[in-house]
Length: 230
Ligand SMILES: [Fe+2]
Image 1 (cartoon, protein in one colour):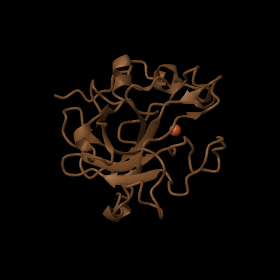
Image 2 (cartoon, helix red, strand yellow; image 1 turned 180 degrees about the horizontal axis):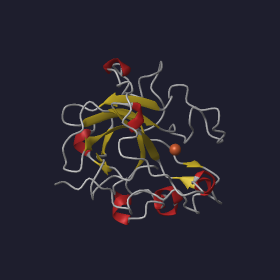
Image 3 (tube, helix red, strand yellow; image 1 turned 90 degrees about the vertical axis):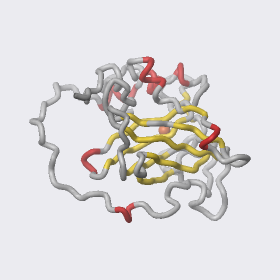
Image 4 (cartoon, protein in one colour; image 1 turned 135 degrees about the vertical axis):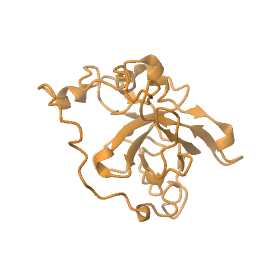
């Protein structure tokens, strides 16, 4: 029988003091254990029409190409046995190449890019693969502590095929010196699990002369689970 559990050192704790906002949002009371099946409520499935052609190309959502280093991020969504999770909604959001989000709440002193909204979606295919065309996001300051800058990262939302299943995580880039200083990344207790949040440079998934490829597989259960809740 497969191990469906997620070892306790993989996902970050609700309260991680060095990550300031967790102090405000972490539950102060003991969690209430829900009976098994409580969340198995009927809900809408994600219709195939939810994803339109081109939604997975974040560089093609405006009149011109966005500024920045074009890249491909692709990988497989897998269960604890390495089996593909098919037809599953994967969405990403990210800052632009200057490290700014296209959101009124982002007041970072960096330019917006009128050709980059920083959001995309796709379904996994029959082998569990997803693929996005985008640009490499910039690092940005986030005021958690003095000189706090988030490492370059892409946010992932995994909706499965129904809204009550939503999971989130973040993907990072290899060799980023900010990783060792980032409380969000460091809030994942297990060092080996943290490494699973770092994509691998994968030339064969890039486009020759156009875009570098990064590979980021996401494992949803078992000892090699990708950290979630980040
Ligand atoms: Fe972010």
